[in-house]
View (spheres, rainbow, N blue to C red):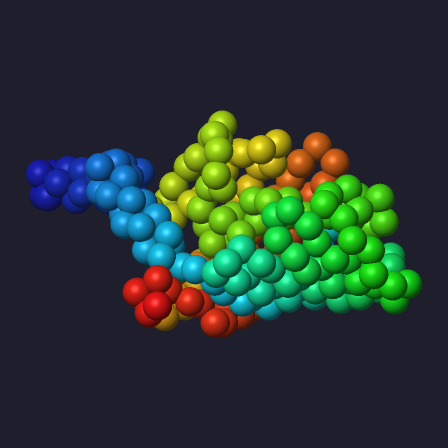
Length: 202
């Protein structure tokens, strides 16, 4: 009887002991990340619809982004951002900013947004970051989840954290992310990805 009770006690204690999490196979994670980067590099253009909030100023609204294969983009912000609806169209060299007050042409849209909205989007890097990739150039930090998806990234003075992905055809693209700089803190929820153009289709 005592042996039976002792055996049961040992089994009970073993069941209550904290489980050691399985070791992460870093080589497998690295391979998944490499495959993801290769798949996402084939994306030439896309459109996304979502919601964006600048938490420091308490401003939020809707965002529409259309990225073309030739580098041109169209960005529309709708909501209580201080100046009404804003449409920004152009490329990395020059853009047109349209508001209810008219159209302004500038080669520094980030400065325009900081001046008129009190915050700005990192337009030069946003295309890559929105897809869950580092932008061109060096980065200070990068971490991945077990599936080889980007969890966090520090690059170009910004820190990004990814909190959810969604299936878009054969791809997994971000659904929620947060981007923070010394002056701006943005939260982006991507409700819908559309018109994802792949190089293999061209």
